[in-house]
Amino acid sequence: MFHRKDTRAVRVGDLTIGGSNEVIMQSMCTTKTADVKATVAEILRLEEAGCQIVRVTVNNKEAAEAIKEIKKQIHIPLVADIHFDHRLALAAIENGIDKVRINPGNIGRREKVEAVVKACKERGIPIRIGVNAGSLENHLLEKYGYPTPEAMVESALFHINILEELDFHDIIVSLKASDVPMAIAAYSQAAKAFNYPLHLGITEAGTLFTGAVKSAAGIGTLLNMGLGNTLRISLSADPVEEIKVARELLKTFGLITNAATLVSCPTCGRLDIDLFSIANEVEDYIAKIKVPIKVSVLGCAVNGPGEAREADIGIAGARGEGMLFRYGEMIRKVPEAELLAELKKEIDIIVDSYEKTGVIP
Ligand code: SF4
Image (cartoon, rainbow, N blue to C red; front, side, top):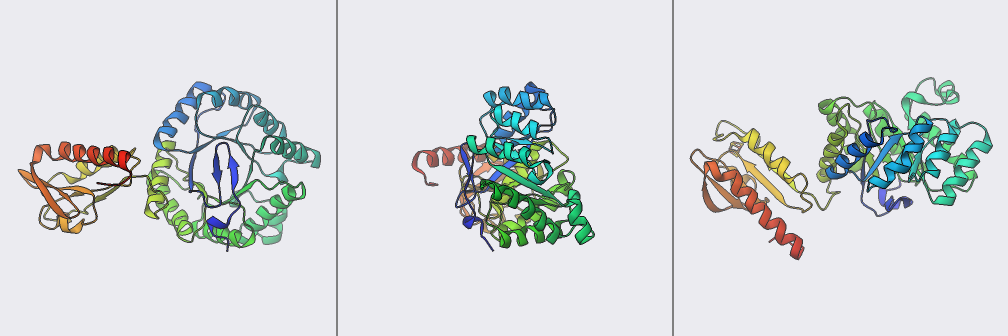
């Protein structure tokens, strides 16, 4: 099985997917692509949340045309999602797209595929082959009867072969399914069949809550196996939430080095403060910090500090007076009303120092 580090490195704009590069977080716009203002506004919000690559639907001429203007106003690579129509792919490429998601086997006549591949080659633009269990080719459904991991991998190989025959190798592959075990099996088998970088995703995963759980189960399993070079969490929600879930998932597996982590206690009968709102506020506060700091928020001063020995900084609540602690040791007592403000100040001091010295003080 090809580990993520053993995959081919493929350039996408100024980023590289695959090889020893970090796992890239991506999302997809929910706006009409032709509405440049709305699309750019959404992409800028995604960028601020940490999104590294963004995809837009290119389903008509106006959308392909809008790419030119969108590209001028954003700072991350832009991907065109195209189904069937090779003219839209050519227009997107002409207008400066950084990557195309299209399945060559669905484009039609050979010369149409050749035209797209030639345009991509000339500009160094990669192609993502997006296999989806819900839209497998008829010849595979006839062969297998229904979507299976084997059919999905065969579909990927079918499209890969078309590109390889044209001596095109800047390929990224996804094998998405809504059924989590099927997606895990498909990606696992794909990693044995070829070494192109894998774009992980569980499609139609659901709302913020159910989609995050399903995606974490599926993508988390694959990340833990050493698979996946880029990922998109698919949610029926604001795409910014997709990035938040993606970042948390990557942090869980130690695949992001520059992000802050929150540790918060599960609460119990000893709870002395309104921990839920404090934990949420701290989580929001550290969301954009690009420093590997571990912050802990605990409900009581009895067991708390000892339970969070690894935290760089933390608070333990108490009625009237709580405490600030580092690595399980109290550094000072603080009136309850000032606890949160004091924690934020301490976080700022650590972040500031890390940015100057490269080490957590
Ligand atoms: Fe309970 Fe305190 Fe532990 Fe939180 S830190 S789970 S309130 S004992």
